[in-house]
Image 1 (cartoon, one colour):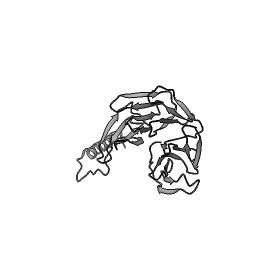
Image 2 (cartoon, helix red, strand yellow):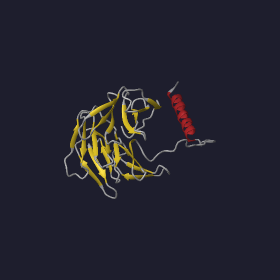
Image 3 (spheres, one colour):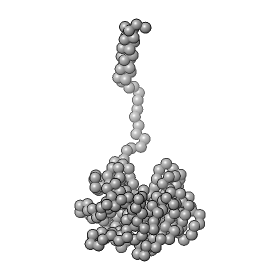
Length: 256
């Protein structure tokens, strides 16, 4: 093929490609199957005393406030201060959250500005309020520790225990003890925040990354790797666990 012929063929191919891509679409209907959400990369969830749901995200660096009845969403703490791996709400409406990338513990009282309560917290992750207002925070990764923080900042943080193995999202029970997952070793534990005593209440749970309690005091945990949700009665020491949901491609829990 001569150079002139090659040039003519190439030119024809370009004209055809342009004609195809610029031709108007006909008989094409676009249907939205699942609408998008204004929230992106949700990590932690917490219900406030007003019944509103708070959702935190690391990637979006935003904490949103959700009305469970209407589905309405509003930004409560915008980026960048809203970076939240896990969050908790006290009985008076004070919001506390862990900014794992920044290594900070932050709080926001109702009607007030964001306050940085502590810095330099490598791997800071789970956070929870007890009903009496006491605030506990955990670190995982290179540092394994559980601390209590004075929300008013008058007293230095208090080490509760280092005897935790990658302790992740936790919750207080009715007796005031803390229940949480040791997600690398597949165990659930009960922790006395006054004495620091740790009691293992379940084993062989895969990779539990979050624990919540139901109305009967049973532990509901989620497996980070499989998406399975399990229910465990801490009174039945090492007995079988109820399979609630899963496996699935998603995760469920307060935080990861």
